Length: 389
Ligand SMILES: Cc1cc2nc3c(=O)[nH]c(=O)nc-3n(C[C@H](O)[C@H](O)[C@H](O)COP(=O)(O)OP(=O)(O)OC[C@H]3O[C@@H](n4cnc5c(N)ncnc54)[C@H](O)[C@@H]3O)c2cc1C
Image 1 (cartoon, helix red, strand yellow):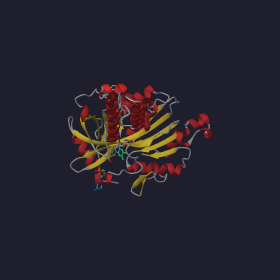
Image 2 (cartoon, protein in one colour; image 1 turned 60 degrees about the vertical axis):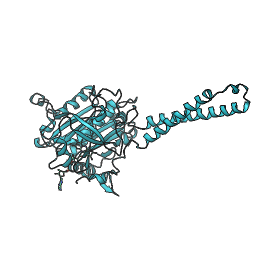
Image 3 (cartoon, protein in one colour; image 1 turned 180 degrees about the horizontal axis):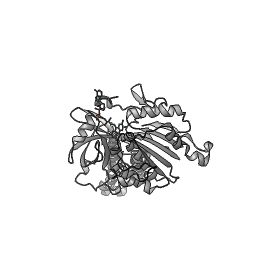
Image 4 (cartoon, protein in one colour; image 1 turned 135 degrees about the horizontal axis):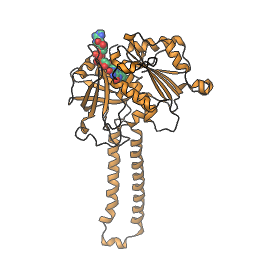
């Protein structure tokens, strides 16, 4: 289905949880700052206005002065707590920097453009405000989004005034904080993807977000991620969140990604685990390299399978069932594993999601999960929480 035009995109579908950041916070901060300013000037005033006669002042003004002081102290504490709450609760500014300002679009500049396959590019985008000072930020302004789960941003096509969602790839070590990398596949006659493919380094584009797509539960033991095409971007986000992004003191889950691509060129170098000799023949694509880096870092935790349509390798029930059976149930027993600790994601183009898990459903202008259908519906998967992205 063709995504809606920008006018309708203002209220996002429900499956896409509303913007994480809250637009009214800036005014709140201004209020708090105002409070703080009043407090300090008021404190100074009694001393500055003091006249010699104050030496013979009665008890009355002193009491007034004390109660004023108490009031200002309370105001200061309230304003301090308010500011602290703002920074803790606002994902955009937890590290003190606000990149996005929803519902407005924020200008970014393309600082790098890599062709990663005949149909896909990775664009590295830098907030306009950081273009001349790329190393200005010391902490990651998207930290909370990375920790929480999967998230996306919208990009605007300025001539047509339409926007489409894209999924940031996890940052590489040493990347300037604030940069975003997006994997963009050029769709045949696609309005926004086609436009993005025409842009070069130095071009300006406008982004809105961040939009939380799925909040990962605190305790996750197993993940099976079935990704079709660019559905690999949220798979990388989940791997990053669970293995790298979270600083929780819990055992890291086991994650298995199956990446289904139409052509080998989309996942160059991705090894069929049954054919280790394939390593020698092929150069390795950018996304495959990033998956391999994570695999090397977390050998027992992350495994990846590559299925290529043109090589006659497709996702089927047998494959899915081999993955879902080799889960922690074997280790802990079914009674000890919570349903939301085992997550089965299906992510990719509409046709892919429909085939594997049945269609998502539009209800009351919002996109919901719909019934479990497709291959997973036929298999009667019950002990996994299935989520269509
Ligand atoms: C949460 C989320 C995250 C996403 N993340 C990514 C990502 O990381 N990378 C990525 O590449 N994509 C991602 N997408 C998909 C992306 O948002 C766009 O849908 C995609 O880029 C196509 O948009 P487009 O404007 O180029 O194509 P559109 O113009 O919307 O066209 C889409 C398809 O419909 C066909 N079409 C267009 N008009 C017609 C018509 N009149 N009749 C029949 N067919 C028509 C086109 O040929 C094309 O194949 C994501 C989507 C969502 C919802």
